[in-house]
Length: 579
Image 1 (tube, rainbow, N blue to C red):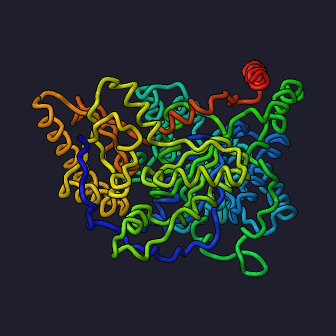
Image 2 (spheres, rainbow, N blue to C red):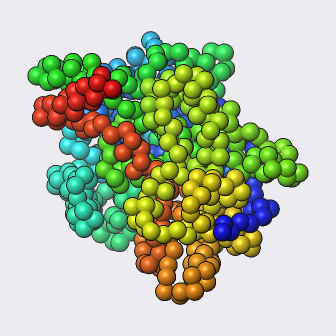
Image 3 (cartoon, one colour):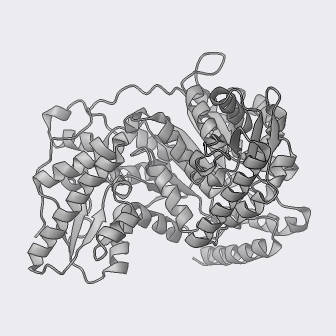
């Protein structure tokens, strides 16, 4: 028996989306997985409490196969090619999250002037210093949290206005590296960051620091102004370079660019087909590793490229990147924050004949455009970070086939069901928290009819929708969390009544990407330790890694890494040719 419910009419957005004030697409090139995730989150945070459709359209290329924090022709060539990728996706504004890359900003601007004259490059250090002067006009002694390499390039010092002295603690970089070690556990990360804060505090007291500029993107969410105080106990303001650049990009995206007043999307022919695939090792290797890199490039067509259709809700794309980081994945990824996609539940209700939703906009055309963008960039494996949007999965698969795209579009329900089988293979009654649209379209119920799906009653479902639309989507996290917790408690009680066992606990599928924000993992583990939660976004990230598993080296300086990848790819080639 499947428990169903009527469609709730409460807590829904207006059917017709309001105009989007952003006129240009923002392109972000990141060489550090954490930096890309945090920058995407910053774009959403700074846009404020607006609907999904009112956020800026953005494309993020997570180019983990490019060397971070390095200079030289090889590194600059890789960054230039990454900017070409952004240009090819129609981005009118480009941001590079690697601070060291901005030491060669003149070369990058020359490249843009020649190949993408309508694209604007946001200078990260300049954005931070402008924010510094705006918020702290009297600041003279400035602390820098950057790598020694970045400090030595004078990338901040050379751009500063007025008489400023810049300081860096000699021990802060060692502490910084300890805090950001990829293999570090939570305790090690916490200890490393504490050591970093202590080093910065010592620097601040020694040099009478007026303000601090954070130029290391990996620590954007771990270093707030409350962590550094002067000798008298007052807080020292901290300017986050990436946050400053995100704010400037959002402002610039509201303005048209180009001689004809249009945005640069009309100038998007600069990237040839498969431009994401062209971020190859050959462009950034040393002469010593070139023979290996040449062979790798010959096998490039067998290397999967991952694409993410985000922006539904606004934080879903950034959340998904966070899941990839949590899983330790380092492959190149293209994330499209496709904010022009209309509300999915509203359109599903329109299809069901709800008169109040007759003005709802069909989201499928914009979803298809996003897939076209990914195909042009060389993506071979794509995911959609919205449960409800999978109601249109068959239409999108048909579109991929019709257009001849070489993309495998994964299904979020497949990923969730695989996770259920891993954790509770014998469980036949599964509780589902989701939007009205997901439940009404029977996205999960029909995906596996052998399972019995437990959904909220009408009143509880209205609370679930309130949690999503009036809570999380409006950045009212606590209100959304309180409502989501009520839904969890109701589903547990319903499951226990069904089995007549108050000591038996269900599997609950978090079938909307807002629910993991409302119910973070720490809260779930503390409050409901016996409940098995399936985070569908985390499951989808795991599935993407498994489906597109061909390792990519995180550094091109290590010949052993490259040789290992070569062996794997040769094996993949032989298997493909044998098939």
